Amino acid sequence: MSLKRELPTSTISGFALSGILVLTILNILLHNIPHPVTTAGDKLLKLNASEGVANAVTTVVVYFRGFDTLGEIAVLFIASLGIGLMLHSNTQCEIKTDSNFMLKTASKILFPIIILFGIYVMIYGHLSPGGGFQGGVIIASGVLLLLISDRSFEVPHAMIVALETFAGVSYVLIGLIGLLVLDKFLGNFLSPDISDMGLLFSGGIIPIIYIIVGIKVGSEMSLIVQNLIKRDENV
Amino acid sequence: MFEFLNQPEVIKIIVTVCSMALFFIGLFGLLTQKHLIKIFISIAIMEVSLFLLFIGLTFKKDFIAPILTNGQTTFSNMNDPVPHAMILTAIVIGMAVLALGVSFAIEYYKLTGRTNIDEMTEMRH
Amino acid sequence: MIGLIILVSFIGIVIIAFASIIQKKLADSIILFMGVGLGSVILFFVFKAPDVALTEAVIGAGISSLTFLMALKHLGVKG
Image (cartoon, rainbow over all chains, first blue to last red; front, side, top):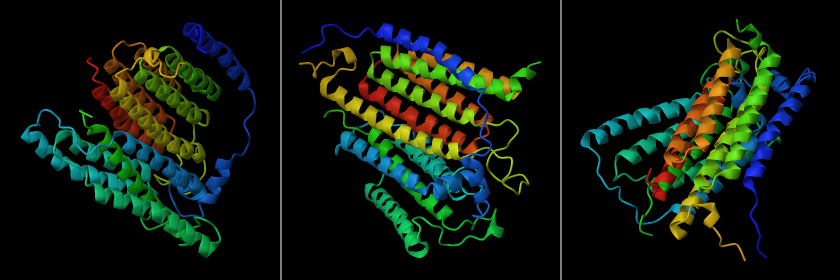
């Protein structure tokens, strides 16, 4: 049975916009509730001092909530799988005009500098703002620069897939080693020294896990970017 | 002259009202636009409004960022690190799912040549 | 001072987002959406959250804008 008439979308949007008035008044009224005195974040900040890591957000993402990061990596993997299934084709499309010789040379000079910056942001993630996600996406944007400036560049498929598999498997293996040694999945079995706070080699397994996350995110983003740009026009 | 804007209650009111205005602008775009890609842009605007609301509500004016720098040696007087960690993963996941949705839209266009949602009538009777 | 910056940035983001939705061409809409991402990076920096600002800057300016621009290219929309 088919709909006899369509939904009046302008009426619905009128209701939606008039909802602003009601909800803002409710929110202003609700702000008279007093704050709780201590939240979960305060307790985690106190616990953070025993891990020896200077960046509190890194410990929360990798150590105190490490299982959520494992789930998020699974979601990224499934999204990359879906994009690869929909858009991949064996005959790549040709960009119609070839670029200038100066553009190709300049982008080949910029590419290692961008990769070096991405690796720096990844490795110093526990001492300054940054980490695995940010560094991985910076590496993928370096690959993007080469893809759009040179029409004969292809990402080496076998190496990227091998890197991604290695990173995904070793994350779970580190968690299982923590389960064997300390009776805690993703436990910190390298026993960090508190007096090392601020040095590069500190924090136990936290920088190691973040580097593994960075490798996985970087390789997945490179594959997504390549599937989006190069696609057969005639299929 | 604008000293009354620095009180914590006024900052909370500004954050709440403007984030929800942004959310309802995104909702308006979702309901009334006809092009498929504009619907995805409206969904992305709705996600940005929620990130701003989440971090703006836990912001304390005189505290610092949750990182030890500049001679600070103890973890005190810092903002809350738990909302920062949650929004970090939410941004990455939102972008990945958006890319998947856009790839579906591209494939549908290659198959039938339509981007107006009023003309997608394959599922009717 | 902080309250004034927050108010001006929020009003700017709301105006740019509304202008992005009611445009007629798709290319203008995508460019104004990148402006929303830039405004949100400024706001995250004022809220003293450097990790979130770095993530939104890299993803909003790189991957999210690239996705929409490639959709524009593959859909064959002129203008």
